[in-house]
Length: 115
Length: 112
Image (cartoon, rainbow over all chains, first blue to last red; front, side, top):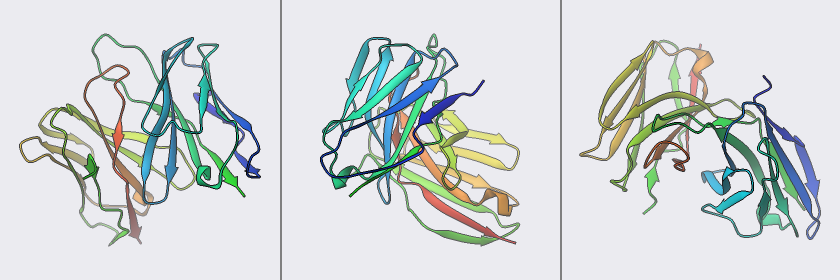
């Protein structure tokens, strides 16, 4: 199992450009998440999905859109990038359980620099 | 006041020292408490989790939760240079897809 993978690993954008970050998991997990991590701010939830075709807003959703067309993929889009979106983006997934707690499994991250 | 407070450090200790990492929180609805370890330029990985109050031990690591004080701790005994990483506390209201609320993370440096 590759676990959770993220593409690309690093990207530089100019203000106003758009891009899509891809998260893929091969563990058949129901739930997937997108976080951003900034110095001094910790990990903050952007959007999450509880299943194929469903998405929900997290703590900091503005400026981002997401889609979950396939169970194994969760896409994060930036329509018009801003310097404030310079960050490290992490994707995570967790399986559906019947009341039993299960950890979130994180990908290696995508470093995004918006100039 | 942020929901979860964690001192960002850095915390520098010599090899073999006992390390204490802490978080405080304000939301009494949190039921699950986790510690994640994050090495430089890597994603976080679960170290330990605890449900409700109490202690949990795993090798050199001990997690403690005091819900009455809204305070959680992670102790590392006989610290090693390989323990040098950022430690993130996290909390959730429930299991399943219940979202996590993270602390800022504490950077730990263990010198040989």
